[in-house]
Length: 171
Image (cartoon, rainbow, N blue to C red):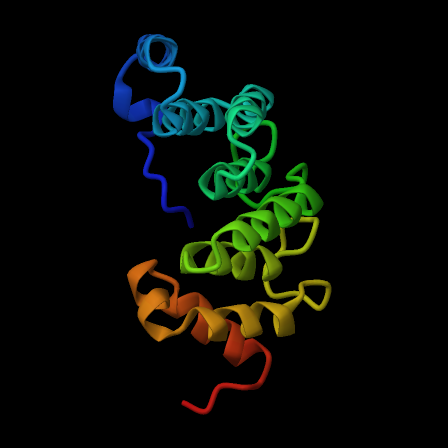
């Protein structure tokens, strides 16, 4: 889940050309965070997570109160070094810290709550809805976000499944 659409490198045809174009765009507009977020997303897609993290940190160095940059950083941390989401090798602790900071800075953006709630449905091994996941916390955040936001960010099924697994689904 993310409110930052990115193109998969495979959509770009030749990923090297796509990355080069995104780098060019980022260098010509270094203060444009959205351009940096697109490049960070492409870096994640090709398994260059460390580069994506650096890019997000550069945005945060320029604007430490940029909630979107923290949310993008959280998104990056939910991927392993190969660009796979919610797999062993992701950094749950850093993702959680980044989502929490995004929520602190912009509590009105419900996508951040949903991102953190989704994160809580996974454990460090990338297994979803296991005993080691934090379902109660996830359910509280899904509930805080509200049905309209869950629908907007395509998270209704995640919420329903979490309710079902936690034996709280009233059907």
